[in-house]
Amino acid sequence: MSEINDRSNWHQDFIVSNLLVIGYNAWAGNISQKCNAIVCSTNSPTVGVSGESFKNHFVGRSRLTPFLNAWLVAPDTAILPHDFVIVHILEVVDNYYPATEVSLLLESFD
Picture 1 (spheres, rainbow, N blue to C red):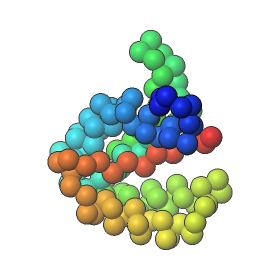
Picture 2: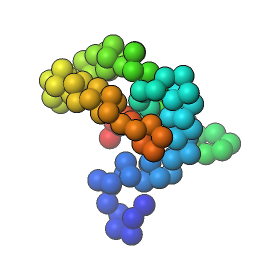
Picture 3: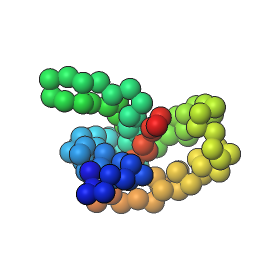
């Protein structure tokens, strides 16, 4: 965490702490499909021998639209009209460079 205890940047600390897992999932998914997204959920972390872990999923581009429709229709994620959000997420996934970038969707229930 940063020197100032600022919880608004928790997502940056999460990415730094879990970069290896996120990067591996993106790399492994990229082998099978060129466009994809990694979805990480901090909703129900588990604590084990190796520390805290979280759910993460690779979602290929061909399955991303149905996944987003189901995920964003939930009442607790209905911040914006989900069609608006889906279009922008798909645009990012279609245009990122998988050799140096990752499409990451991070779910949290703070």
